Image 1 (cartoon, rainbow, N blue to C red):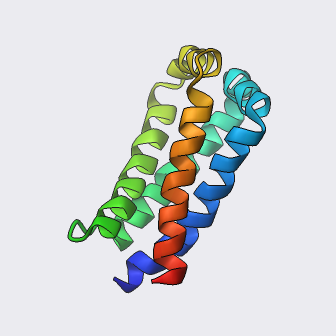
Image 2: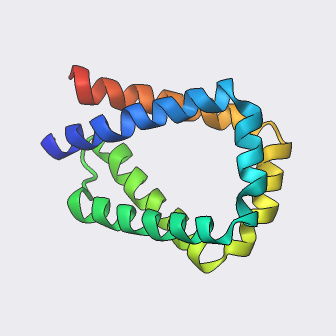
Length: 127
């Protein structure tokens, strides 16, 4: 559980801040999603970073016992899978980014990120 607590302390505040940002600065995140495909190098750097971070976390923490362990493990696998998608099929970003920016998913995603971030922050620092 010590590894889970450490990773919750890393993931929690980051997800909480990004989730709050998605709610407070919705236009910024909509533009970010729309403009991402215009910067191929940024997509490649993100993909490589996400793959490396995801693989490192999976190697460090691939535990499926308690609920907090499952959440942390899912974040590692999700990060790696998202990085792989960005690296292998970068063309998918344009339509997905436009769809997410045009639909009202940014506040929903922000709320979900805040919820998970608050949970992980509580697990990491209060328990």
